[in-house]
Length: 145
Image: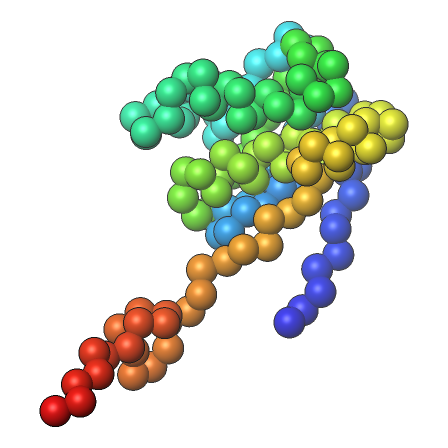
């Protein structure tokens, strides 16, 4: 297994840039001072995630969690470019990217975000299908006679 090095948040012009990952999703997050708007792939977050089984409140609560914990709600605008994976993986990848970018804004946020579990990359991945089996673990039904 290859060891991945955590990419530290870095300043790109007026933005703080960080990367978040979850399953197959990769989110590049750019944070800058603003009014608290969140844009995903060029569209507002509610519009991007609309049509899925998520309510607007669920999306807001999930994406704004790092801001609630650090007390910076409404102070930063977020631009996220996300690709790959499913909708839940993308949502959680953006959340991790936001948390990492906030650490780049103020290193004192790290303890609070880490205690809330928002700086931990969820390493669970889909297990691959094995040959001779129906799925990753499901085998043919055994018949004694």
